[in-house]
Length: 142
Image (cartoon, rainbow, N blue to C red; front, side, top):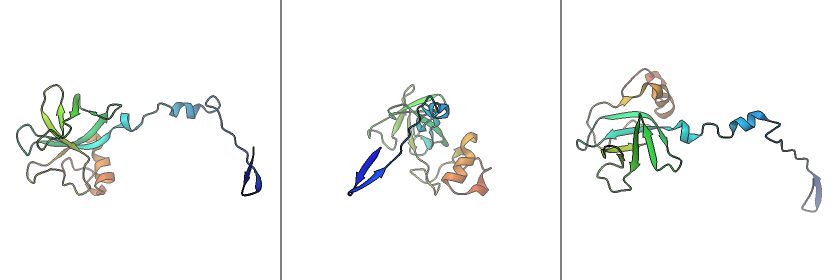
């Protein structure tokens, strides 16, 4: 292909391999994306008051990202209608605060409460990538 840029002729060769020629590219189509991999989140139960039991765990999202899934529970947004909560569990109606974990570990809306449990499958990633404290990777509570 020949292109003319600023009065100069350039010969540009382009080759675009087809998916048939590159099976590894075809395998990437539909591979795990951020929706299926999920995201590490802070999850606090708000049904008993302002401070409730909390966890750090991996949630997954629906295609529209309006629904969250965690440990067999399905959550939908309260769309700003909650009091100190932003999601509710569909099956029970119980309210939760679900947000991305903070680097400083101060995820609770209110000080106090018991330590935050960290799911085993996300513990190493939480301490190293989110908190930047790899020396604490064996700690099960934040």
